Image (cartoon, rainbow, N blue to C red; front, side, top):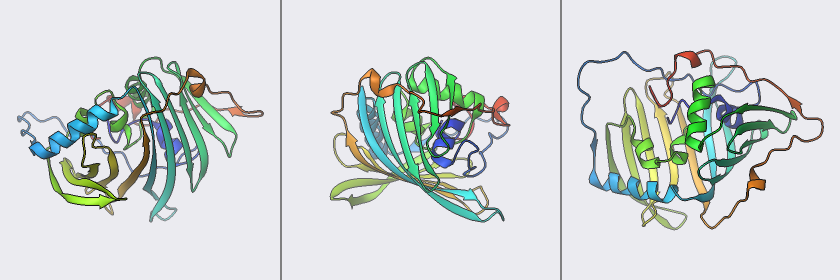
Length: 271
């Protein structure tokens, strides 16, 4: 689910209602009759991810992610765009994302029945009905509109399992210190051509501190970078925190399906 997760997040993180295409989607390769190789993931890496997964399955939490991603300029040159995301989660079916970045600010609100995306600078918003859970909402929206959202794995029902989906190898590289906290630096490979570096706190919760996704098979080998901070598991958001009320004068716009959405399968193909 990592990298083909829903145009709404792509718009929220990558641009306005018209959107910025961070980089092309990775298409699933042809089906193979050969048995897939057994993942070679070290016990230490699996244990750290398991601790992370248990922590992120908490009923409610919030965090901040600062991201850098690549998009194509008018001449095809790789340009970078920066965003800060403040994310609040209340399982099973509430989520709020406040996004500020180089291209303005926006808001994503999921109230368990409807997903809203609001672009503050343009004073425009869009919505689609998606009852269910947070993970179900992401899969449903991905099936309709599909684009990448590299942080999706951390918000699923089983974060560690979701992160390892499609990964064939992984290990702990070393231990580094980030803002005074010892962290495990890990490296994972996901064919075809995706490399993942993940830094998890070296403690009983193993919370994410950094993520880098590198696309070796794409021109220029672009990457996505995220740093995590302000983890808070003591929050108690109410239903009112996940209600979207359009501001005065806000214009509702329609979201068009992504051109390749019909050929995508939720949770399938490249992340």
